Length: 231
Image (cartoon, rainbow, N blue to C red; front, side):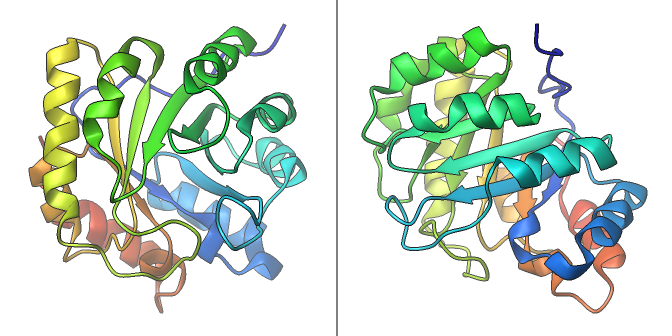
């Protein structure tokens, strides 16, 4: 029986999830320890298959290694064409939450139900140009909705201004559902854009380059948290 997920329920507090896609992999253990001590809430792990997005990144082994070394919940974002091939190995590796894309090839309801059956929290993500209304029938199946504020596949991109509207629409959908669902935003998050995302309705922020590429990553994480107004 799989150990239950450590991901907390959405509770109105802003959570910050450093994305290890931008970390120095030579020093990953050290950088993760820094993030834990600095007060990170989760670690965000971007998984890319080279098909859904034109890039490759991490496999289950990185999740397994992180699981042994950190107490932070592992927020795993599957940017993959066929998520059914990935959910079991990443769940077994220790993922606390698996987020899949509504635009993937597999039937999304079946994928989300399969994630829940394994005992992992389930998330659904949408690209910037995907109609948020498609999320409405899925709210009973998810613990988190991830709004991409850049086009997925590469770190270091700038926050798309139209993302504010997309986040607002998703927040309205969550409110109508009556469920306690995290609204996460990923892409171009920094001390300048974090307040925009939070005011629009986000309560979880993924930041990669703004943290790990900063001269002082610990300070950078704290600045993002301080910049984001509490809900």
